[in-house]
Image (cartoon, rainbow, N blue to C red; front, top):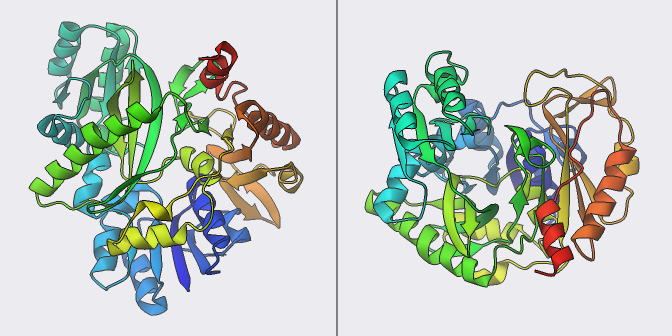
Length: 428
């Protein structure tokens, strides 16, 4: 059995790592992969957005399943191209992927479906956008409409900060075409959490909950990143919240898409803000989150491949998904300067030694092989992920492994899971 995993980040290493343990013992290929995926499969010199190249490879090799990791190829129509040549795919088609490809589209879908989310308006004109911000007041959220690799969001604490973010996007083109339109949302209060759901067009199976840490600095300060760490499960996502997530968010969203002739198959990530057990949608992603995937897949009990195949085939059911009771924690190590400018090519020491810490896996993200050494090749470099008897134990193991690893400019947060630890301490 051949499986192709498309992508090159920590999410894709985690997916490939989990599939490599499958009882079917599939032959794994990763395009383009990284130094970590090379440990469990064969890397291919194909870009994630080389739709023609990926399609040609699949025509020749006839993989039994293609698992698409990042948003760019999904929004570019890779699923559509592969389905046209009868290749089974895990990942939504281009029309469905617009839930992430355009924040304006996602908000319109939610608005039409009655999904709880923040009030919003979208703009291409700077002065109109600034006038709206003055009318709504701060704090307020400014988002680039298109794909901006997790960095197109500003939570503005003041009118001045909001106006600066608007001008960055619309006048200075900081996000390129992705920022040619901005979506401005009211600020939601509460606590964030993430829910991933497998969807086969009809059936919805929620995966284990998690909580990401977006800000670069401890105490959730500084600019947004692609994610500095995560843990699973997040106790704020209790059973009542999970029921509301299915009833008030997933089901009406899928129904509204279907009303527009769009069938969603793949994984749908709901970034939530939860207050008093009421979830509201902050954003939708049309793929596994990163680093949530590392934390969640570490807890997946048994084979994952049958569930992914069932999504592609339209035969998903809950019995295909089981969870280990132990919680997990993922600590992301980044390059110095990230999420701004950073250097690449620094050798990384002691990855293997870090992986020897009990119940720990070092998922590689921004890495490459150079002269037989693993070197830094991206902003988020590694995602050290551990299981534990409780969250404190999982974090302890992860940080022991983190402190074992060395490379020039290495940076990480020391407070992953701080809200959950506080809840545990307070017994709430």
